[in-house]
Length: 204
Image 1 (cartoon, rainbow, N blue to C red):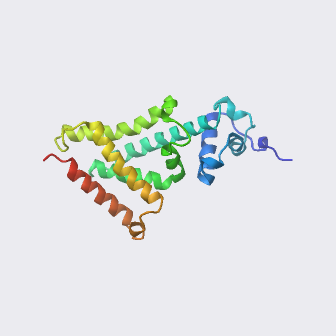
Image 2 (image 1 turned 90 degrees about the horizontal axis):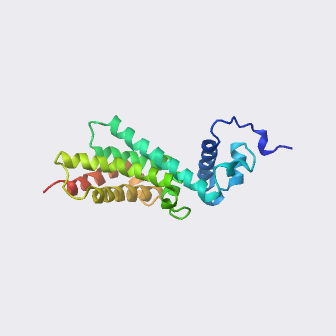
Image 3 (image 1 turned 60 degrees about the vertical axis):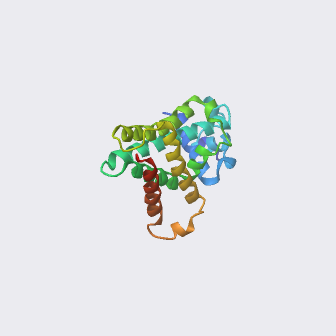
């Protein structure tokens, strides 16, 4: 009879293996289909193993969301490094949307607000702030160069993030068929959105 131990797990970082298994299950069936026993089975460890790192499903979901924000942060940072000649806002918008389209289930869980309270988990809160700070640094750099209005940079980040995230979720939920039906439609709407945002951010 096959048991969860039949797939040997090479212990090196059990926590990360469990998070990876959780993300896999999240992708397959959403948060409702995820529990610690299923995660253990997918990781090839005993049913008790997840409790060494996660007291319950909420703690695992917090760790999954934390991993998501760390990945998003890295994706945004890489986009800025790889597109130094392009508008930083355009690079960030394209990176934000591309990350979400590649990881839709993870992105939804990161921002669902239904499964976990971000403020209750310090590491998750810090990870979400790291993504925020990438946007904040761009705003501050543009302000220092005189290209953006001299307003509270954190408020401007919220405006920018709202545009990025609103556009992203409309795309994820297939609410923009007039855009996605075109071969380059997604990139066109991103560029148009960033252009309009820049118009509002430039000093008068």
